Length: 375
Image (cartoon, rainbow, N blue to C red):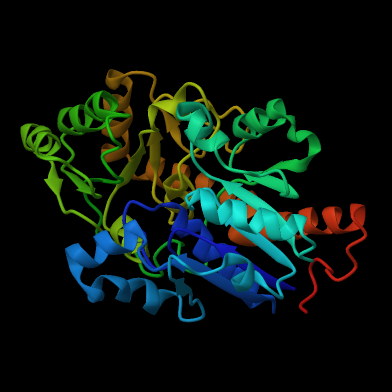
């Protein structure tokens, strides 16, 4: 099968967490023999910021970790329909220009032979509905939404059975427990500041409890304004700035535990959608404690795969127990890894994607696509 994916950036994960899952899924498709082509704008904001901060060397970790992946950087005046020509399946991520989304839809309506799917991995459908409604999806064959509550938003807008819940997952070729255990110490959190979406939550469920539990805290991420760094200094947090996603497994391997602090929309309006870091951390075999978050889709086993803190005081107690009890750390980490291996790998998601393609091609009598078989 020939697959074309239009993304904001494959090369950069600077404030672009969707690149994590995308890399793993596309690499899995290539592993199975499919022809994968990726397109990203030459002026991608994420890539520009990464290069501005770290130079071209900032792209090296991705290229070293994913030697089979490559992308075409297209100019602003490029015709996306020409780029997609010859594909059997075209997937368009929601972090793309409205004009590009519309152009691919027009080509589909005009007789393009590919299946066309929209991939939504953000809360803007509820936090900025006017932005999402401006996308022209009339000719799209379906929507891939990264959580059931987001799928419900699309169903309410008339998509019916043409929207599928397609969760993110862990790339096991890169995210796995360390081959050799080394000394671990302290707590780690890898995440961006969040545009004010979890400022208080980070203080209540991460910075404060880490200090109270006597655990040194290392934080990695970008877009920390001066006021954020002042908060980190107040709590004695060690801030390291951006870390390439490919470096995350080694970072996890040096620490006793990590914490999940969901953005406010995923704890309230769109419950049940975990950050990609939950999948990746559990795959790496590090114990995790979650701030209030409802696993409404039963993706995990709360209390077993990770510990749940309903207050800052409970978070402190959990972190203290993990600091003092190696056997508890081992049990929680093993349980989380077990669930990832059973349900939440990029291989699982590729299986799901191929089933979706198969169902669509059967309904539409699109015999040029045989899901699960390389072209």
